[in-house]
Length: 260
Image 1 (tube, rainbow, N blue to C red):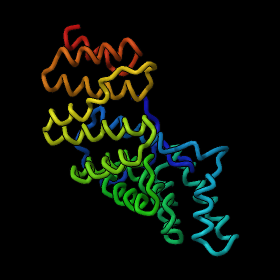
Image 2 (image 1 turned 90 degrees about the horizontal axis):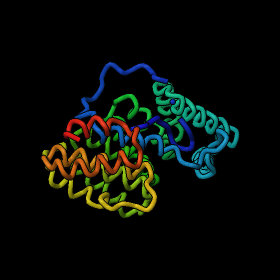
Image 3 (image 1 turned 45 degrees about the vertical axis):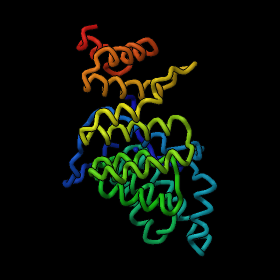
Image 4 (image 1 turned 180 degrees about the vertical axis):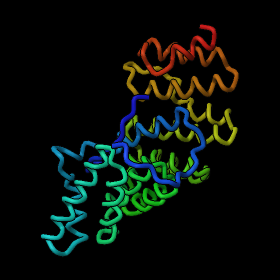
């Protein structure tokens, strides 16, 4: 599902070297693709013209006494997010770990480390860093990525807890959609297809204007219905996707497989 990658506002990505140890991922289905959309979205509109957003600048300034040192660390943090944006994940993580020694109380530093580890497939390290970032400064934008990291580790109760926090935060519709898809995926991982489908019920409504996050939710719902043996329901949503975007991922192959 058309995903790229990114870091927060901060910016971030180069297919960097993979670490020798990669935590085992549960599956590579639509939920993983959804979470990668979340990584892209975690680069919010706060980053303009390759500058840190004002909130992050203020937090760095508050954490470092020397104005000169703070200015240098801000530039290093910005450079790390640029590296993340350009897919140089190992470099971004290395800089992030160095910055954490002096700015352990700055959420953006831990977010950088978490996003880098996520892209490197280091789910355990990603979850730890993103949990730390959320503790320091709750941010709905990165909650779906934290949820997906926890899901990859089989920490389904924690996935549900973060999902609850995300809903309470009343985030943008696309971020809520990302969280919903990952929560449904968590149920699916546990063999609870009925609960997964129930979680996706809000996606059944057809909006006046179809956006990307609607397509992603319909795809997840159609996939779940197909796996649950509800061919009619699966066809309905795959056809709904095809009508809105005929070139959307493998929707035509899925319809052919269902005899349409």
